[in-house]
Image 1 (cartoon, rainbow, N blue to C red):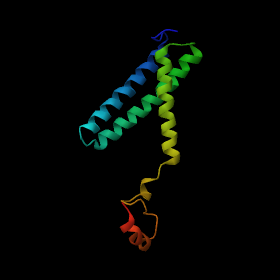
Image 2: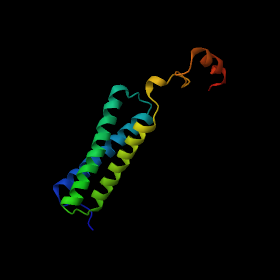
Image 3: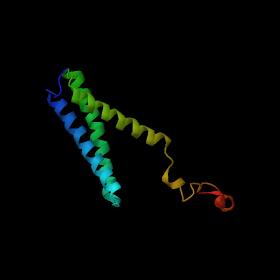
Image 4: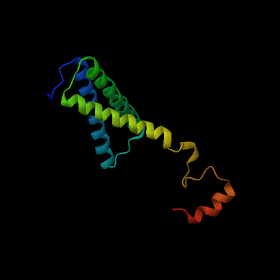
Amino acid sequence: MYVLPKSLSGRWSVGLAGIFIIFLVLRVLARLSGMALGPAGSIAMAVQSISGIAALLSGLTSMTMDKERSILVLLAVLVGALVLMALIYELLFSEPSYRRDSHGFSFLPAKFRAFIAPFGS
């Protein structure tokens, strides 16, 4: 096993995983500094997710077609697999935004929401 990839698709995989990590660090630093991200945060998250999944696909391509076995490609595939699993989890188990309000009970009748509001957080 070697560290750096030798195939073109392996290099793409490592580069895309690097873009994912760079955007992750930038978003974490912006959040820690208290900066409001707004629409730029959504765009950064989309670029981050797309680059992570693309790293997975190009890494798997390089591993199957080019027989790439470098450590960085394996790490890029791992990063991409984690991104894909997080995306699938978010799609399956997150509550839609139209069903959320300040208490998270917007789907309940208004009388019942008024009744349980004092007990909420």
